[in-house]
Length: 625
Image 1 (cartoon, one colour):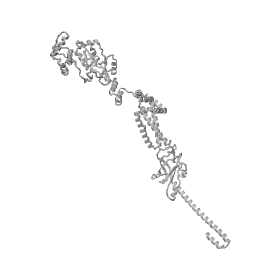
Image 2 (cartoon, helix red, strand yellow):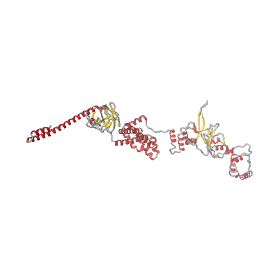
Image 3 (spheres, rainbow, N blue to C red):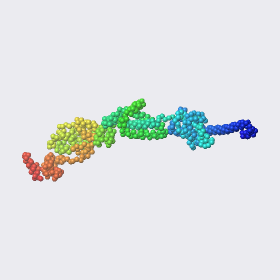
Image 4 (cartoon, rainbow, N blue to C red):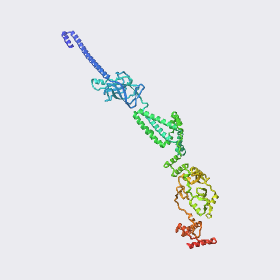
């Protein structure tokens, strides 16, 4: 258009100054028109872009207006969520949480973020507190979806923002770069965070300390409480130097048994609870339960109790100051509780061993202590003295060696006494149960068998009294009486016989000696050089070297022309067997020699003077031998 105007003007004004001026004016107009046209083109382009952006924004808002979160629920959490008074869930920061959100317009391309800035529904999320969390693909249903979030370190309330994310062109690309849309500030669309109580390293240190104290309290509970007060007293008096030292330290604390027990248990419960709470703060609930159970059982119960069951005295003594400190700290609760237990259960006395338990204790520990078998038997026998009576150990009257009061103390009787091997001989009158006196073997020291002294005469001279006891007297009482020695070391056992129609009477049924009591005490038979039997009750004969039996020389031969006394026969036997070579045991046995002397080969020669008698004996020996 401007070019046409310019040509027309040029034709009309050719060759004049006016032409020049017009040309200049037209050139200016042409330039202005070009600038105007360019400005119009730019303006139209800008308006078109603005309209396009407005349309896109309307499309974006229409898209996001479809997504609406109406509520949420915590499905899983590393740390169990807490709930505030107004129902807002509280999650530990820096933990992963699985949320189930409820609402409309959910797709697999949706993302959510958390913001601490409140805004009405549909408003922009100006500041986000977390990164974008995509919806778990495949979890979207009609009105729900699942999403994993990481709880941020933000104090205060957190709100939800959501958008649908696309990676395409044109409209979808614009939507992908659109901001998140705020989901509102309702209480049911809020969550809060809370921080861990302690730093990680502090929690680990406290957990380790709690586990050590748990082990200590568990071990002390078994080690100290298993130490009986009686046992501690024994160790203080009879133990080694270390045991005496340890027992002296533990005894004052152990005397307060219930107070000590309550203090240890309170301390153990306290550290175990603290350990579990701190471990639960570091891990999830199930892992915390499993880890705390394994740690407490292995390191807090089994290991320390296994150690303290064997070394409780040493462990308790070396940790006595910790024990005292725990008793002082827990005093407000443990001391009143212990007093209540004292009133309800009574004072702790300690283990008391009766005879049976003490005897069994000695017996079962024989293999691990330094007691010999004989020592164990002596201890056991001494403890049983009060249980046994004289009727259990007595020799029955039928089995006792006794003499009748009318007997003569000739060679035969004395030989029988020597053969019996007893030092005390009961003397009866009439029947064996009627014991009247005792004959001691030492009473025969001045008795010549050739005198045929009546036994009654000897008994009346010495007048040895008899000691009678009832059959139910225990051996400890009997031993005490024998020990005093006032009534001798032999007693006759009698009982009341009420059988029959007559009046009851005392009946002697046996005898008991000091040796019998001592044998029961040492649980063994005492054998001396004169004993014939190993046991006076079982009548088991003793295996010993046979001694010479003098009673064989007391045999009476009615068909002998000349009778000599047994003493002379014995003297002849001893002379021939020891002096004359031909009659020694190397050539002739003693049995043959005794049989030879029992033959009727003795002549009675009367002579005067001792010398003539010796000569006659020699001549007789020469003639006969």
